[in-house]
Image (cartoon, rainbow, N blue to C red):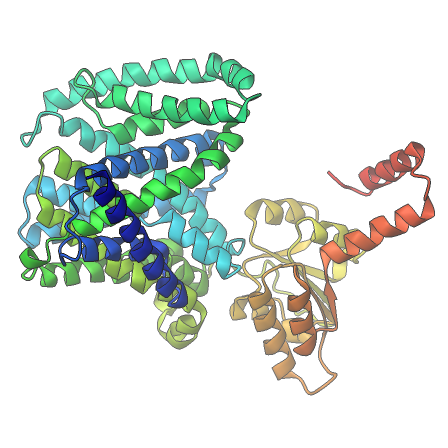
Length: 563
């Protein structure tokens, strides 16, 4: 029996690895590979899954550890830095999607409680997938990338609140009641307050002592996560393992070693999460869902089209240009891993059956697949759809030049943070237009008398606002090679050879620098290369490594403005 179970798990993982390799070739996230593995192992009948109970336990451990690490990573102070725009878009998108989604699901014939779950499941987007794809596109630090990371942080917080709320309604079985919810909520609140106090005032000192032994820190962190999770899922409290795991993580987030805890447990979490998605895929009853494809199609289109439209409308109302609104919208065109957790929780407490879980799983497969290509090819799609997107843009958008002066022979600086700040110390203020998408930087430099444009230099309209073709020199400190190539090609195509503004750009890798030179950049800044040259020169001037020389150099750097 043990050998057979071992064999089943080994085969399942090999299938998952094979699907993941194919998915990588197709530029798809591995989540889809794991769900498809479950489909192969379960409803298609290629594996008997005699070890299903073991896999279910491993699956629950995976979700518990997932939310535990979300809690460990949860930076409460980070919510203060999300920004007004991200908070409005995040809250607005969740509210509108949930309300509209509820009526859509009700129209499709689902019960009220199932409609609530499904509507909420359609509301949240996947932080893991979006951040990974934006990082690969080098758009994570673009204007829309920064905004969407803030929106996703808001969504994650609301998703966790939704999990607690719906879990509270589900403790008594299939007939949820307000009284039961209030009782469970009060018990949970008391335990949460106790764990919060323990985590902030007592646990950090204990963790500091334990951290001297890496193995002990690893073991006790997992024991804490699973122990607290079990406490919250016990009959006395009546919440869920997942919520308990999240609160256990919140308690550890106050310790100085929380980064270390996260890095050591993450590989273990990833393994168990793979099992969770495999089990999720195995629950799809293919024989019973032949009649739900119209429902799956409607809900998938709602997520793929409805969610982006809601975000684009909200972004347009806030004054963002159509490019920023469009690229922001398509990042929200998929459902989240929290959606799967939510539906499994609802099934587990008896609010609905496997059919609803299967529907959301299929919606997840479709929307994750579709949105991946939407994000990857977002710039091309924008070029095609740009003429039709003006309805999502105000006549006087927020992203526009702050001056009506006709500029000529001026200097354009794209990105005024870090490297850009140093350049501003030598550039003539009256000849410079700064383009930046950080509202704090824009406000600060504007108050200092600089001409500042709030927006993304990769946007053609922003380029036109700052009269890029009339500039004497364009300096981009933006590290995104794709944005730099777009900017470079547009300027070079406008002028004959050796004409037009001089262009200085920034690259993080040598191959990026070579590519920019090939496309016509006049000079490419390689920060790591220049930093290495500076240190090498400093060492060559003082081969004896005198401490006094280092102190003098440090003081000069501080005087020059290094923070």
